[in-house]
Length: 383
Image (cartoon, rainbow, N blue to C red; front, top):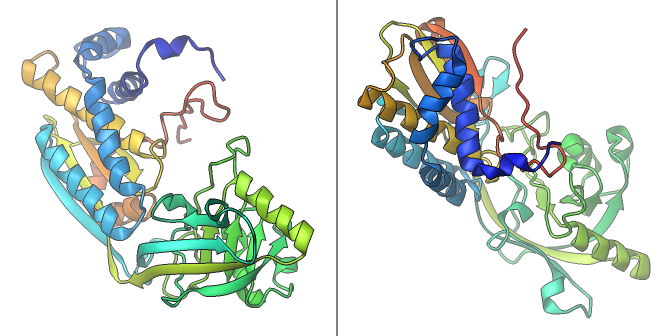
């Protein structure tokens, strides 16, 4: 997965250098477009790592709650920041988040908001702190995105464990009124839980079980695909840590039955899925598009991508203003949006602009540490 030598450079600066190196390879900013090393040496001193980290912290502070009101706050911050760093024609736009509007083959999701949400073990002599399996106010990712709600007094249910992800088998299980503990991401077989009459899911799957107190974020909860649309079923959705999953399984083995109380305050509504765009104008009509999604709960996925793009554009505007590099031949457009749902809407509503776009590059989760499995930099090219 790489050696430790790259850590000599602060990770935020390394991200921006990586991004700019790829970008300028596309747009040929240097006087000698084939001398990429010269370009890198020109831009490197102008990068401000602390500014990039500040961008990341601001985006993460709102996106970590993954509700549509918080997405709007993120978008307002990004719009303001684009203007402050010198981008032109900055626009805060949006797709209808009504659960019915189709863009291409994608149906836009319903907007969703969440307030307090908790999941607590009942009938146990556990210490009070161990009884709480999920608390959205303390750990937002303990609640799945687009989770349904309960009555204000909450609901009590029995926990039943399901092994595997065979949807056809799960659909025939006696799960009516149960909260289902899963060892696979339940988003992949939610429709089967609906058919079986389940009250909801308690996800125990994680991509990295060594992180005993981490938990997998459930960001898909549609009955027929990723996002929750108007025809989807409002099942409850929780996610617990490997440590908590081991505790629940221990209680099931010892007592046969585990009861929990869920109290969830969420709502679905017709709203807006925002996205923001701005441009460094070129001398000609063509554009290069750099894009990446916001509006997910991770600092790595994808507040770092947003930060790398903002700092890259800020660096370029400083270099152009100082005369160290010329105005680019092609405009460099930045688009920050909801993954797929925002980019599809942007493409479909800006056909003339897209006809003038000659290349695009997406920045998604660029900040994984080299000593963690699965976090190497990967560059994908279209055929």
